[in-house]
Image 1 (tube, rainbow over the protein chains, first blue to last red):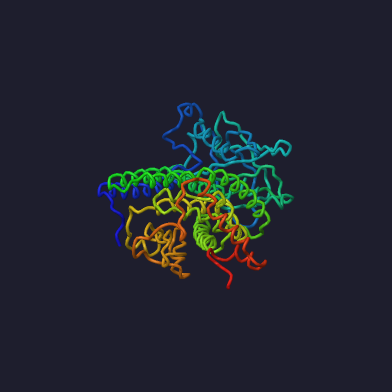
Image 2: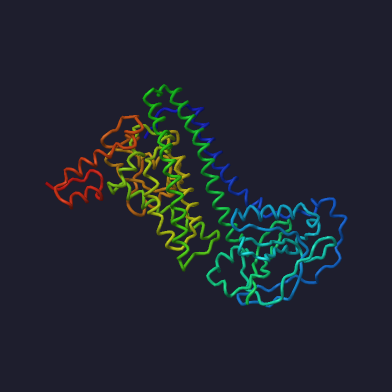
Length: 203
Length: 285
């Protein structure tokens, strides 16, 4: 079977372009994995003003057991940055912006790869459909406001963010407090988030 | 990654691939036209046919926007009521891609074998020339059929974003297989839809008609007995050739032909059969 006449040079160029396209598309598709949407800055990228702050106190343990059963969570606080998230507009973009703000803040200098980063969702306002999101770490950082997670029973959801779980559980909203739901982001050695667990406060 | 991250990734990745494929398709088409010029195959008629194929994207694009918007709404409304929603992760994304490819095969088979659907899809097959521009050649009614055939995936509990992403990827794949520049590709021919397999699909020769319906994978044709390997270069186009380059004629070529058949129906049964039986069906004398 013979195809119509093809110029050897153009045929080669065509083949190379085709292979190039597939290679390019694979590279493009892999890119988001290497540039995870949620960015935590490496310590080497600490902003200079971070040096003006000092860690006053480090929590002894940040381990929280994740089970399918509700867990009891004692009160704890995080030093973090807060912003209001409008749930009616592009939530993903707002959260990305907030992580970026965290990465560029003095707090970034105190993020450690082996310590989780927390996101606390609080003060949900149903009239404006907004919620305050605080991103931060358990370590107490002088000059940074502290936000507390209330003591109580929390239901855990592995590999889900708080907003995912709110969406999934909206039919059983009466079971939840919506007071200080939080998510815990585990980082790898390159400060990239590798796992997330959501904790929803139960009534 | 969390569910939200997977959804965001799949949505971004699929549309990003589609957009880039369109850019590369422009390059492939330019090289094909250049090859036509260099090998003295170029003619005004052939060039007009290419332009005519590309132009079908204009009405197609507008209906696609409207239908796609409606489909997003419809799928999510239905999805909200599904109690057995399937978790979103890498495995379910891969599974839905496989199922979307199978759906494409079934849809493609149906739009060839049901006259009412062929009304739209015949536009894609009506060119007697075959190059990357053929991949752009669609009826403005094509998007409607696709929405119907992918509904079962929503009912199975897959997140609509995964379904749309998979659909977009299967569609994007079609742009590299419409050409006469690439021959056979060795072992890839066993399981992938390739330019060679798809040339057969566009053939109007009797042994090539209604063969090779696959989207990404050719295995569906091998499983369901619709596979045909390329033995000689096909004659492209419809069995009753359509030579017009007029965009209106291209879009509606089959309409008056169906109307004529429907008007000749002697009873309701024949009328319905003209709509649902394969193109070329005639009542028994």
